Length: 90
Image (cartoon, rainbow, N blue to C red):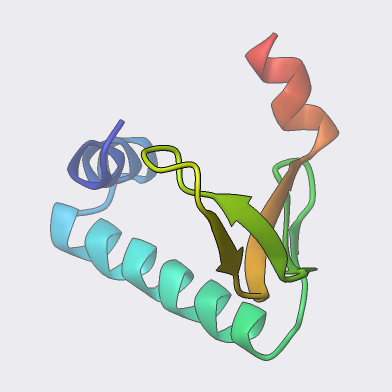
């Protein structure tokens, strides 16, 4: 499912116009991104939680040449599915 299909599904499920559903989805994405940038955790009970995890610097290998390269440390987004979502997917 891509973003346009998600907007269509949200609009039909919640009896919204596509424009309202798009604004709601964009607001969710913006709010979630902002909270994660500040280091907060975003938890949606039953759905799951988004959090930030720090990935340490490490040494990798270029697959074409076999030469070692340094991979910088960075923050990555983690998602942990909630129990209701996990149950519904099975």
